[in-house]
Length: 367
Image (cartoon, rainbow, N blue to C red):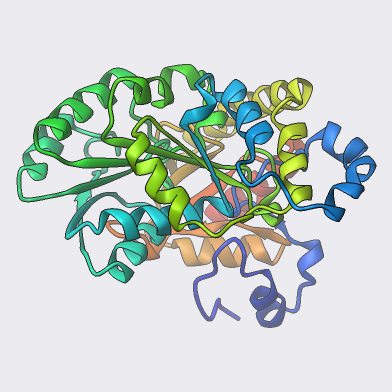
């Protein structure tokens, strides 16, 4: 049996039906979620705060915003919180009404969907394999000259795991400022990078009013079910509009308390970075040493892999892995990629070893 369709990291129920595998038994290398699970401190202490649900949250979420501000090193007045980063993307698009957005891709499809729902058009600026999927600023600015009013960047980018460092981001913001272009930066994966301070654009929000940065807790803090997202923005007029349009109490009391606990769990944060950095280095070295695979420089908690063997595809990789209860992301549905690309995130060492064996066995059988 071959896969009947392409699956997203959250499609475990569908995979359960197609392959007859219990979703609880699937190890997802596709969801890009921290393999350590939720914050250690949160697991130990959240039940002690259960009484929080007996009252409405603070309408301004001041304590939570101050906690987030301390975590990202900015003024709490630059923080907007929302029901996941998806709510904040929607609100931002509704307010700015971009007629023409330029999206750097291949990347997350939700950006294009939100622009379309807001009545705008999306165009893509392609990161290329020839350029190792790194962003060429000169080529980007040339494309931005064509009546663009919104630039969307995912940094680190999904699925390429490439980054734009702060100096390069400053060049982009300078150009966009001259052209009255707003820049939306999704930093969902920035905390997984080896040195987040080299990559994050948060410090630039103090100097530029044409940038808004989105983050959440779904991936690094492994808590997608809490639906807690936040934005960093130094443009207080834009902040005010977003807060006016946002539903009151969009984050429940328990999620707000959980956020404060997670953002201060230094042991969890340090262990996550140590684990991801060591496994990123090891897994990429193993794949690059094999003649059938090529990895592209990975900065996030996942890597884009190209198959160099003509005898199997990303669909075959998905199928071979899922039969061992391991789920990778077939990247053939991303713009500018094809059925020779797949993505995997870094899990616990023994799980990574199991997936590497599946990949190498498939390559051997395909010679």
